[in-house]
Image (cartoon, rainbow, N blue to C red; front, side, top):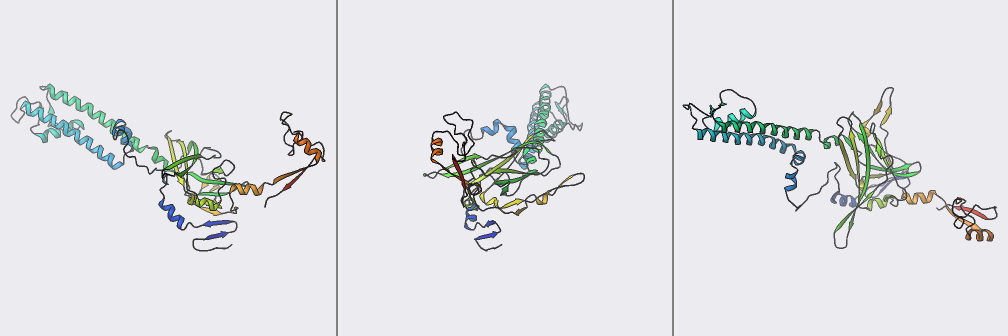
Length: 396
């Protein structure tokens, strides 16, 4: 085991820790495509229609606004409605000439705007103190009271519905399902794999969920514009029942965009791994999504997650203190492509003259695996040891 300090390399058995140094400062300056909490730092400017999309879908707009703005809307909606209907009652009383000495008032006990405002609030809140009330002599005032009662029921329904929708928001449930703070690269059954951990922090379980991962790359064009490309990663066991924390695995095999990346190449790459988990909660039956992203600096080569699941006599015990904890493992500091090349031998085939003639005519197969092809394409099995000799050499 050897170590070096500074912006160099620390070798631990077969693993290497790369300190970013200047690259780390550059990494901090570059804006992430997705924040760690799943939010997108996107600002829309000069959107067609300006504010009209928000007013056309006002319910969704109110559900998505912050709580403090919601409470402001909640308070203003009632106060403004009280003022509007109070002004109506005051105008009715003023036109009818209601006063203390009036024998036929429209609204008993309303002699000014303050009294009209109190009557409006008592009517909409169904308080009814008794000192102010509507008489049957004024049909206009009766119509206004009826309109206010209907409007009050409608306003209560909208406000309560918005508050309930915000409290049951999928974003809040998504905060109780989380990904590990880093991803790791290690060997699984002799294959280099990229993996990250997913867990549900609540006691209730998730009925069903689908995991997904995309590699987002930034491509700078000659004129200075930036194109964003997306590549889906193949994940083992995409459909999950998240009863206990699980590790999501992507094999670094041919076809993977990370297949040819070595640990050194990884630090120089400019990409972002965006992962998500879409699932249905068993308590509400609502659809939720948790997402996060990993930069190249968030991928730890040569590490694996610590085991956090233990089997007890009656329960499975999960220690979430180890959710983000990793430990060093022996991993070759090579790309998956180079690792596979060194694992698998390259085959060299030497023929006798007779066997060479048969092979060119498609009669024999040097690998002895092609037997179901048409005759013109079917290299058969060597008929005798003299037909061909198979030699295997291993690349260094």
